[in-house]
Length: 201
Image (cartoon, rainbow, N blue to C red; front, side):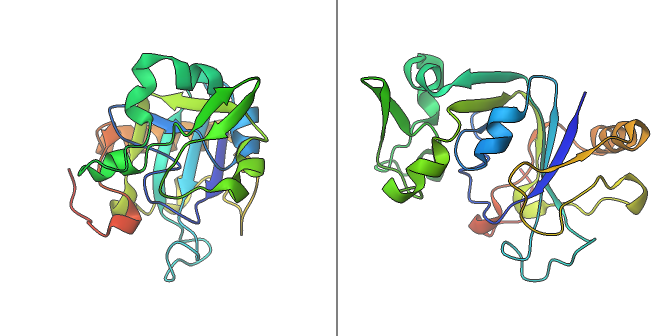
């Protein structure tokens, strides 16, 4: 088991996408998507860019996921069970606006489909890794992000980190996972930070 932390500059439901009973990381953070494997844990924390009141050492946990699947973009697009993650901009359901299944394989390359956040200028970064991380064992706090007790806080980058920081203290990791599992139910706990809800589901 490995445990990695990084800071989010955006939390709008796209990366990660916590909807429809499983959490996915399919765009942004190509190094994390490429280098994390099944069984690894990933923790996303708040940042100054996301929350102006955020202080170094006081970052809040926005989501925690165990990687339970890893698939290429081609399978993510072509497998019907992931169609729910494709963006539907005509829908009245905001969750469908932020679908992260936005790369359609076309003749050994990828075409970006219309979506709310990423444009052609984001493709080079997104396509540095063509892997999608999946999780059916996750805690997504979103607008109800939590502050962890000091004794179980993992290593967190001071600023942005393309690959995240690894925490190797096994006892710290186990205590953190135990704390979260004892106090919260798995799954989506609140809506994304930028939705401005702070109303637990």
